[in-house]
Image 1 (cartoon, rainbow, N blue to C red):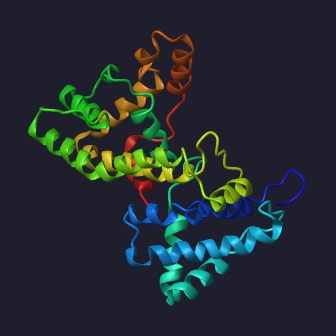
Image 2 (image 1 turned 90 degrees about the vertical axis):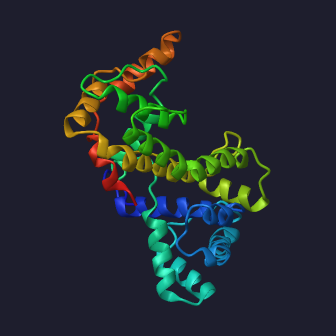
Length: 282
């Protein structure tokens, strides 16, 4: 990274990619890939093995606490995967797939999706008031889908509700398993990577980017199914509702600290209307 006040954002992005890719070099990497529709399912074990070799070569000489001036070269990662699977073109496509994974944080093209994920899945309480200007039956179906509750409303919304529930069942199952994985046990190799990249094992923060990836799948799936039912005016109503602090306030009614947090989140101007969610779908 450059010295002084200038920031080398290219280097920052490369370090970020290296740390994110390291999660797939852990002992759970192959299993996670096998459950997220990895486009090359027959290469899961080989890809994970290649990543382990790349990271072992980079970390072990430094005793697990590397002091490198430059992050891993993506060309080196591609070369190792190509050597392992015997297909340079596929290796290049695989590295591009990893690079495109949506990770929460920053103001990149996925920021809109993650903002509305937080609105829909974090601050939206069971009894949040319907935004003024949004169809009541649509709103109830929408909230029921988010909360994975049964719903018996109009047929058009039933299809959206059922479609979302079915499509995200594997995501929900994997998120539950991911929470269990975060409790351990961890291999010595997992702990070495955790030390190298500052993952807080005690707080269950090894595979945080995987959680981001799954969250992105939930919000984009939700909006693919329900988005066509929300008019442009209703989407604008959602933005106004969120900006005005209506979302989730009753959830913190008995907890002044939580109420203050929800107010702070709710009052922030959304970076986009929900119609921008799917443009970030990788």
